[in-house]
Structures are given as C-alpha cells and as structure tokens.
Image (cartoon, rainbow, N blue to C red; front, side, top):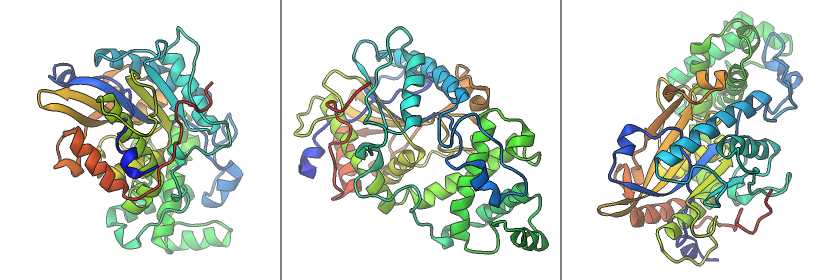
Length: 411
C-alpha cells in the first residue's frame, strides 16, 4: 500500500459536546464528523502499593482493578453520550447509532471497550450497543501506531522544562510528602521514598505527570479531599498540578518524532476517510462504509497528544486545567462552505468539576473551542485539499496499517 493511496481516503467523524450558537448559525454545513475521544475515568494503572514509594501516606484504594473503568466513569460517559446525541442532532447529523450512520471504534483495552458500551448507552439507549474493536489483548495499530514509541518511552528535553513547571513540581512534592525542603527530602530518601526534586528534572517531570494524573483521577472519581490529596490539596490545587501531566505529554508525546510513530497511522486513515466523505475515490479501505456520517474513535490521552503534535495544535485553556481529561475529544468536521469543502477542528473537554459530579448536561460542563490550524495558515476552516497536503507532510513516510477497518471484529 502506498502513502499516496492512503491519502486518497476519508477521515472520521467526532461527536462534540454542545454546539455553540455561532456554529448553529454558521453558513457551514457539517457533512461528516469524527470524534477522537479519550476513554472514561479509570483507576491508576498501578496498584496503591506500587505508588507507595512516592508519598508519605497510603494512596487511596479504588473499587476496580488497576487501569479499569470505574462505575462513576461509566455513569459519566453515559451522561456524555446523552449530550453528544443532542449536539449531533443540532449539527444536522444523526443523533444515535441505531441507523448505521454512526460508527463507534474502540481500542482493544478493557477500559476502552467498556467506555464504548457506556457512551453508547447514553447516545443510543433504544438499541443494543454495537461497536468495533479488536479482541482484548490484541494491539490495534489504529490507536497504537506503527513502530512508534509506547506510553513510557517518550523523551523530554530537560532544557524545555521552564520555571513555572519546576515550581509546580515543588508544589506536587509538598502534596506527596507534606514538605519539600532539603531536610524533608533527605529524610524521605532515608525512609526509602523516591523524591521528585534534586535530580534529573526531565525524568522527574515524566514521573510527576503520571502521579498528578492519578491524583486528578481520584478527584474526578469523587473521592473526598482527605483521600485524593491527603488533605493538602483543594480543587484549584488539582487543576494546578495536572498541568504537569499536560507539560509532560506536550514535551514527550506531541513532538514531531513521537507523534509520527504513535499517530501517523491514525491521521493517515482519518484523512483518507474525510476524502471519501467528500466524494473522492480512494484505493485504501476507509474506516467506515460510504454514508457513515459520524465516527467515534475511543482512544487514549496519548492519541490526542499525538494528533496535536502532527497537526501543530494547542488547545490549552488556562481556566480548564487538564488538556487530556477523561472523555476529552478532538473533533474533525468535514464542512461544506460557499468556497468548497473544508476541515474544521475543535476540542470538547469536560471540566474537572463536571467529571467529579458525573454530569455533562450543563453548558459549562464541557469547554468547546474551535482550533486554528498552524499547518493551514492558522485558519479555523482549512480547505480539504490543503488539509490533505499538510497531513501528508506531517506523517511523512511513516507506515500506515489497515488498522481497525470495517471488516474487523465487532461487538
């Protein structure tokens, strides 16, 4: 399969929470939508005993095994699915997955498969949940990339760690140990604890990003303050320390090199699918048959970071906190305009407060932001041909695989 063939396909359709009034009144007609969405609230991928070396007090216990979707995460995604259906309808798209015009494709991990079922229970309660996924335990190159770096190997340049990030590292150390001065750190090390300060700052940032995410997840799960932050962290503090996760991902996973390996295959297939939706022929199987107007990809935060790196996107909102929250989505819209077909990108990110409450229906529960595309002259709507060209350049010669195409196993 040649890269030229890959770029003649169509991309995905992503369902966004709440269409804005500006979008509703826009002269642009949404022809197809692709949603790349992170799975729901899960437990940390490591058990509390494995995290004990980083904190002075025990880490909170969870109601599920490490790395699994929680009951609260299921309820939250169900609420997000209900909102998604209304937003799709408002955009003139099919509002449920019962008629065949909406396809859900999930990564093969148990939490992603469970997220697909939970989202569909809200989006399409009137029909049986049906989604596409490889068997559990079988890596899907659509989400995992082709020869790319895995979640633990992305490199960080220590020189890129700024003073604000270093200050936030100290704040997290204070939360973990109850102190961060030199005497405290020496005592913690003597007690067998691992500390974040005083060593390799790049390595410390990667560790801190993971620890901060675990604290954020406990907050989003609804745990009391005494459990998610040992009584030393309020909601504003959670929003501050999760920026360590944002920065770690930006430096380790949203670089051109890491993005290409992890996300190039996905972007190639997204671009191919968009082309098909625009009526162009393709020599590679798109992710869904013609007539599928909405495709929802249920992936990971690393997938979102990789797409950001490839497309030169930055969607940080200072008042939001987490750039890659559970249920957060990057949306690709193929739109018809007076000047022809174009690709419009936006994000839809649940707030930490909404995740904690488990309710997504309020307007303020999800931050929606239309993105300017650096690879398209910083335009919000990029002509389809230009988008295809810039995506081809971003992916370069990275291999593309069939990934999760329509003939893959379905549930």
